[in-house]
Amino acid sequence: MSARAETHEGQGAKQEAPTRRARKKKTCPICAKALSGNQQEQRCRPFCSKHCAEIDLGRWLEGRYAIEGPPVDRAESDFDSDPDGNR
Image (cartoon, rainbow, N blue to C red; front, side):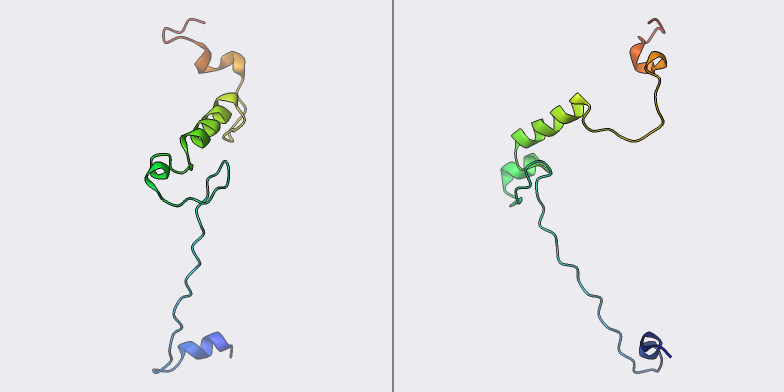
């Protein structure tokens, strides 16, 4: 019989308290600075400053980040046409 099975048998068996995970310190995803939670950082969350938030936005706009999905044929993309269907 395994040790795990033995602890669950019997009326007086004590169950161990679940172990708590140590909380990870939150850091800025751009510069890795530890976040302290001050008011400025709360406004720019999850970044440490407006500067880091703007760096992240620039990376999105440059296309450095991408969300996985099926390949898109740029010639047939809906984004290239106007609302009336003209190209």
